[in-house]
Every structure is written in structure tokens, then in C-alpha cells.
Image 1 (cartoon, rainbow, N blue to C red):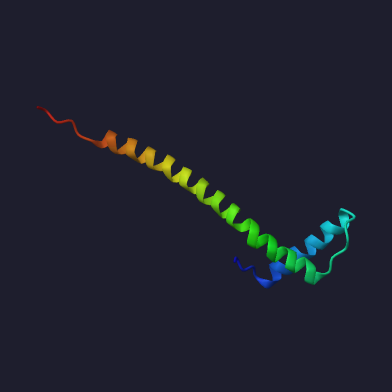
Image 2 (cartoon, helix red, strand yellow):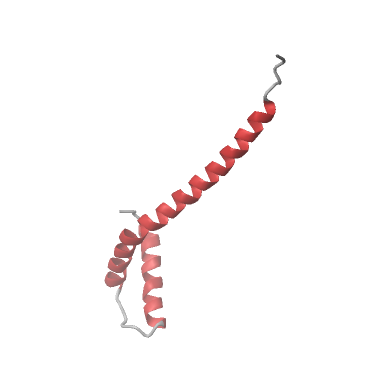
Length: 80
């Protein structure tokens, strides 16, 4: 599971508490907010990570296609 720095985790837990208040949902304490955050990180991180990998793969493929085209332009003609 992804580990957040303690300061970031506390800040995100506070934002979750604020969100619950703004939605007029049951108020949650810091412990509940941190537990919910841990759960969401565990469940959501693989999806976000895979999206990043997919985006990176597409970028690399596009760049490699450009490199391949550049390499073809560098070839010298051969007389036969």
C-alpha cells in the first residue's frame, strides 16, 4: 500500500472531515477519516497508477514513432 507522509495524511484526513461536514453527512473524527483515507488509497491507487502507466506507454510509443521516422530520414541511399 502507498505510504503518505504523516503531515500529508493528516491534511487529507482534515479535508475528508470537512467534506463530510459540507455534505451534511455524519461527522467523522480524525481516526475515522484516517481509516477511510487508508481504505480509499488501498482501493483507488491501483486504478490511478494503471492510468498513469497507460498514459506513459502512449507517450513513449508516440515518441518512439517519431524517433523511428527520424532514423529513416538519416539512412543513406545505396546505389545498385
